[in-house]
Image (cartoon, rainbow, N blue to C red; front, side):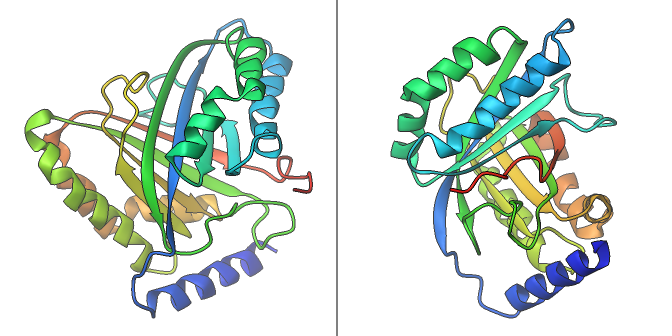
Length: 249
């Protein structure tokens, strides 16, 4: 089954790499990192994440939500333990999501009692293929891995950020072991971003593909090109499992 998943992914990327790089549409990517309290109970954290995940079925114009626990071994997670990733149609949908009573209830009842730190960042991403959920029950891939980087470009290097983001997005087209999808963009919400200026998200069907991506010469070269431009960086990866996505939309 794992090999079959890999072959479908390779086939999908091969088709994509043979066509012109035209975007199908723009979406808003809402990324939130949480630091769980040391004494937070496991069941309480699960209820928190389940509550956040369920908002995609309760709030209009949310394309989908992925949630998960930061994988062990992340060297640049800065102590963040859990991740919420929300894809929305536009900035108006993001505002409606943020102000929605169901969202506010989950934050008040399930999030605030269990976390000591929150970092949130929003950017407009360009999607080259399906804007819907990549990992979802009934789709080709019911589980996978989301790899998120938050970047803090120094003010004097901000003008060079767009060139890097374009280069990073193009890593999708380099080889069959690379991501199913990459989005990247400049943060436009500054209330809880802690100075982070840009975000990226890459999706993989298997952990081995994530490892290959990190070790690929083109990835290393792209990241090395901004080493001296950054005042900070956070990396988190979380596993999206079929345990989420069992409801019908």
